[in-house]
Length: 258
Length: 206
Image (cartoon, rainbow over all chains, first blue to last red; front, side):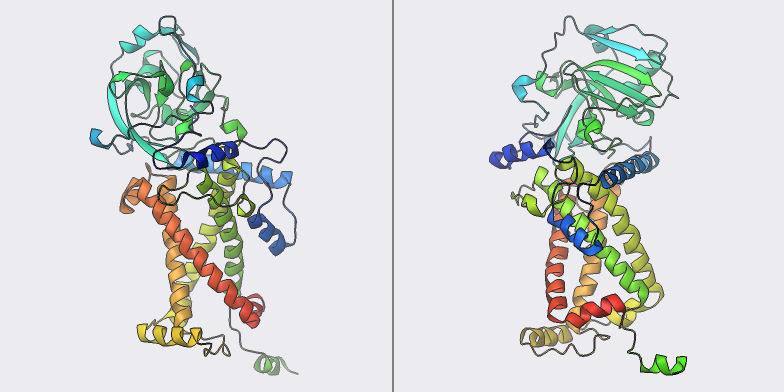
């Protein structure tokens, strides 16, 4: 679920429309190194022109990989994200994706099946009724968007770590990859997959997860930025290969931990 | 001339080498952090300040690029800043150059500065206004790093985030610290241009 575009209360929607256009790269120019006075000043200070340099972009991506490793070290598998009282829930909770709200995928709950694959013993797929029968719990946590805004929501579902054990997943594997109905995908580290607050979410604020928030299932991770929380999840693979993700492949930091 | 004679005839050293090196590394790091920070800000301006920074003065081109710059330059800023603060404390540089800061002297020197009566003859001694501004910007630097960490890691460093009043409040603290530093930079660069020999001493040391 890409939380990259939608208005939040108190923000001028006109700014956001302009803003949304800026969040995606202009294909006519280099990804990261568009003309900027800040960069111009660097050019002036150092006497070397690093604008439009593949080397600079490569170096930034190397540092981003280094930051992935730092964040993995910083990640404490037992540290819980703060939880909040129901009175602090943000209403209305913002919709945010790389598509408009009316373009959210329509998944048929009757025919839905969660495909499970990779390094797991039991690869049978799961119907929604079977998933709903799993033991569930509720968390009221803060969703933090890569854009900077945050919102508090209430999510109910099953612990992903319990599910992984139930299907006999090899939890020594490095990654879990999620595939979504709209073509979105992302890969997370196993440590985060096993975190007690990482949840296969079926309900939002005591109602079946609405289409705009990821029906029939999203993966809620209060320890990661919003875009690492996939919506409309239809497939899950346990793997030792980093299969990337929609925004990660475009240059957003892979780990994106909070 | 003997070596001794050379050393006695040369102008006294005003800025030691470590001050000059950390100063210019910091200048580069700050430009990268501020430029990319402004582009990140544009993705979701704070509700109380709903403006956009003109694209022409931001760095990174789009949100992912700006974030990549910001989280790369942070290492330069923090490592260099820690070297500077450690050496400033260990060598007694801060104590000798910045303290004491007396309110009465600040008021007197501020009046003199605004009246154009402040002397810039001896660059080795800071006037009270300079002391206050340099001390203040070092404090703003500490605050911007700590508030930045609390925005970056509001779960792993949640105690720090709570110290700033929570995630949303920490964003405001980060913003105000940026504004304070940019305000300092405007005055600092303007004065360096008015007194060009101060620029020379920050390069050559004398």
